[in-house]
Image (cartoon, rainbow, N blue to C red; front, side):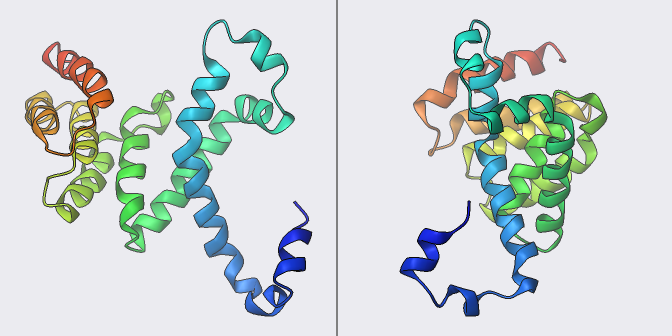
Length: 178
């Protein structure tokens, strides 16, 4: 992207941003990409999607072939944001640490720590944060806590109806100690 459209509509942008802003803007962009990754991953990795995959734009194909380095970098950026106190990063980081397909990137204890911070910030009332905390406990091998928080997630007032099925599936996995 050349940003020529932005410069045309906002010519002052050249003087509003400094080189020191790049790191923060890159972090924001990484968080947006990290939030969208499950949609991209599903679209790329779904079985029977060969026709779509063959027609996928080059950047999406690169995501498939560079999954681990990109995912590792996302975890690094989210960790840095979480350490700086950026609350939206708490849950995003915890989820990735708890459920990454790459076992080398999972860390149940760290996931529990960040998921707990996310839940504390919402007074343990957000279903998706509770779901993350349950997944983190399961990854750490504490299935009793996983069951406790998954049940609480299913009882949360803000639970979206289309999230219930996946949460119930995970609850059953925790019962089987998986």
